[in-house]
Image: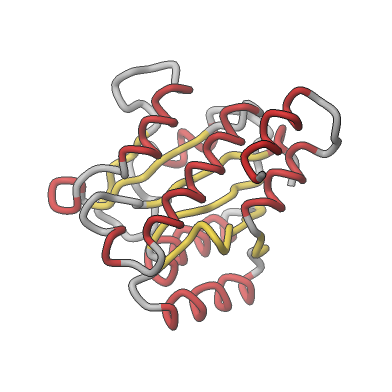
Length: 186
């Protein structure tokens, strides 16, 4: 993973959905960790919301971090959708393609076996290099999460952890970015 080639996508970590999933607080915390890393290293962040009228908006801790780093205050980094995959949603691919050379997509969110899976499969079909952050995705059942991750790996996605994302994006120790971000795991 290379921070200069990456975008971070947080899929559907919404108010009415995440509490029903496995390890909801840890998932939100790990998504926040990734957004903090992305913000510090100038990695674009895109957030999707599945039918927000019914499922609510993105968990406030995540959304606050995304909005702090955004050039807009109108939710410009948030894409609403009704399709399970994020790819066909209005504006999603446009946001992915806004910054040329960003062919690596790091994915976190929920549910692993539905919206995350379908987004990953379509991004791979479109030639993207996709990384799924295993400790920042979840489903209502662990069974669904495990089989979702296995299917994505079989399709060519790389399964990683939040710390591996951070350290690969950083590349070296001793920088101000390293000092700031490594404090997140102490």
